[in-house]
Amino acid sequence: MLPQSFLSLVNNPYVHLIHNEVVAAGAMQVLELGVGEGYSTVALLYAVEETRGFLHSIDHRDFAPGRERIVRDGPKSPRWRFLHVDDRTCVFPFSVEALYVDTSHEEEHTLLELERFVRPETRLVLLHDTLLLGEWDGHPVGVMSAVRRFTAAHPKWIFTELLPDDPGGCGLGKLVRA
Image 1 (spheres, rainbow, N blue to C red):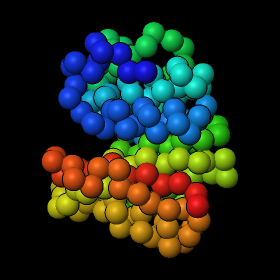
Image 2: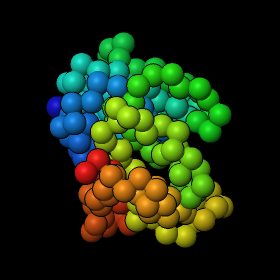
Image 3: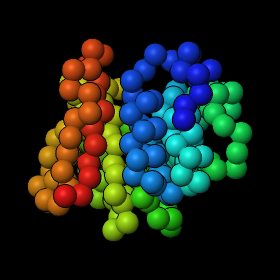
């Protein structure tokens, strides 16, 4: 359960959904691609505390405010490893039961992440910014284009938008096997 001390700092429906989806899936091995501000990491850490799992977070950036938030607001446990690498080139030898994607938002990069990290044991994929339009960091946003291409190539995966009326216009989507 997410602690009230954390929830009082962040009025964000994403953290509830991320946490609850991972717990409901019973995911023991969780991979997060993109740490950024650390809100999702804290939610995922509390989820793996409940499932008695482990969280691996990969980001090519080491964003100090996000890391500070994780240390300050996250549970104090050895259930987390931060890998300061580019997910496009790293070797990740662990199983992935749940995957959370929030990186460049570019279509080709997102599709590559799905193809590389969705594995036979994966039962849940969460993607942030599924409703985002326009550009992110100077590049066209293509999260949903990547999702459409992935589900066309892998029809057993079904997409659901978890926040279709997101007032921030960002969205959070879920892929599960049919």
